[in-house]
Image (cartoon, rainbow, N blue to C red; front, side, top):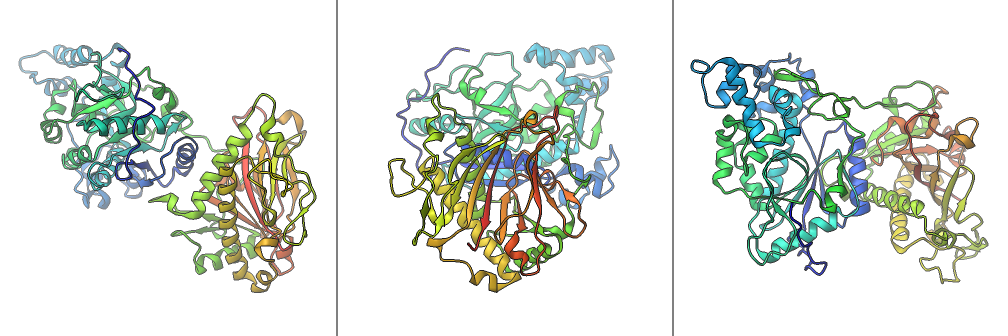
Length: 625
């Protein structure tokens, strides 16, 4: 592929109207994947307008409606599909010579079975790279409930993108894509270059896999385009791509859901040649091709292609799926077909949380009914899990937004390893007192490091300075961004905590000091998870907290365990929750004086030899004094 000049760093920024919308396609059961993608987005990109789109869980629906395998009629008759007029393209599976002859436009009456299959395979050999030829022996042999669910999810995204203001592009991400540095800046720079040149385009492959033998030529229409994109040849993998508003309209009006087949084959058929003639002849494909569909791509050698990579920690929903038509042919195996393994930690073997300790939050705030339900759970179990919504404009939820931002920024701080350690050393506190009347003790505030962890400790009523040169504060924040995000996090947690405590005993709320003397604390912990330094695999031994309530968003690396007051069992609560979307709340010592059982909790580390990682956790404690 010929080298191209990257877009100038001085490219004009996109206007607010043209700033892209980001859609993340997920399923309700994939909250951990979604949390990972959100964290990467907030850590590494300037993109902020994010909408979560729940797709159709074909596997679950087939199970709930007792749809037998290989029953297209029963599958299409499910209410969720019938209401959308979804019709599967029944000619997609090719498993024998008769079907092979059909898709290459010949007849077994004039062609021997062997020749029909050879002609079928020769189409793939002619058009695709040699390392892609097993595709016909696997993916073209079957259609699964996962394929249908994936196609419906992308179609929903196209509808949303088509409804955006004219000229506004939409970035579409599947929930198993891992976004690394460079993603947001590279995409917005290219979009700015396209807008400046008033170029006509419909889709940009951000992360994809090239199947076509033919080389891709640089995109040079119009002549004043100064970006670095190429004209796409046949590419698959739609975990990260961008559509223009006009491109989304073409896709949304193509009639794809009336001839549904794998979306990874639909999209490239719109702008390049598909080996199967039957695909090229489908009405939804012809309609989009007649509209002059233009697809572009980042080059395979561009830094962006290394900056956006599939998350291999998770399996494919479409491949591990209920079979609708055809057969699985040659099993490819590998990570893509592996089921995810769920670990439950070191506590009692409990496969799920008791329903009585989960409170689902609907909307952007805690309703009185939810606060009352949380209070009842605390009285019964000593802890409660607040489950935040994972669909729609998730970052419109102030609490979730603050969790994502705070986790991202503290993770970056703990990962900072400047040569002389000056960043962290500048955050070491000087002790002393602070607050309006010097009533708040600041010993231990700021950054400290111990054998098993490092942490940053904040007393909310004595908030640290944002400038290391300040002499008025006994400790300083790593940066203004960390300070602002953490303050929002603490404010959101405080509001929720007060609502829950009010539902238990208004008297306790009356004891809270004014904000300028607030003794509540916020701690950002970084556990190294080094089993060689802990004989009993414990990062923090069992204890209770001194305040009213403690709240923490669940970490990506499980470690927190709580003792259920109703049974006495230790529950690996974090291993049973979804990162960031679940907030664990447990009763502390002062609340115990009002008849609520105090929650003992501890932090463990993974068993040696098990896949794990370092653990970052941000904790808020509502304190009276």
